[in-house]
Picture 1: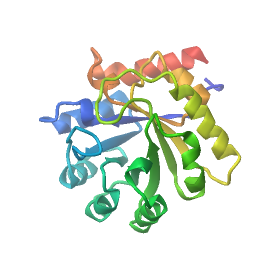
Picture 2: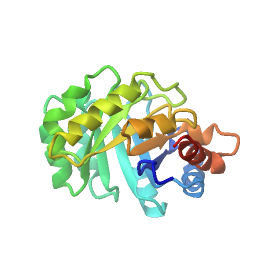
Picture 3: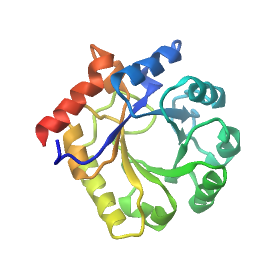
Picture 4: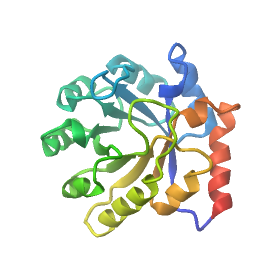
Length: 225
């Protein structure tokens, strides 16, 4: 266990039963998630539509876990004031969705939240380098964003290692998140490549025993060390 890089699990309720979100939150808590991630999908940047600020506010009120918001939206600038003050500690937006990413980072920070920067699988990892000193987190999508249940893309491991190398040669202390396709059979390799946070969604809610899902992934990580 001592050789395993320190890591966290973020439970994403997007793959849960959207008619019973409180139960989805409870499952993530019981399963042993370290934080919750709420995916805000606008039907434009990604084809799906998920939920908005009221769900964020209520989740922050009832959850025992810290909450982060992942904006999968076309105009992140518009969502920052709408989401400010809801109780989440971090807001992640997509580099591909903004022509003024530095301004978005500043706006998130001024709103009292940690700023996170997400990139899609086809975006070069070098694109995050100019903003590394100003963000708390880099979120690498391991799948095409917006749909839970996809298989992790094989290129993700190299992309994690590339971003880890960029962070280590910069003044940044940003963490690395992998979002999408995380399962027991790939989690250890992602941690080994340099990931700090693994987002698990379908890996929880499509598991035969959701409450035991993260324990299974932890066992796979420690067993592979």
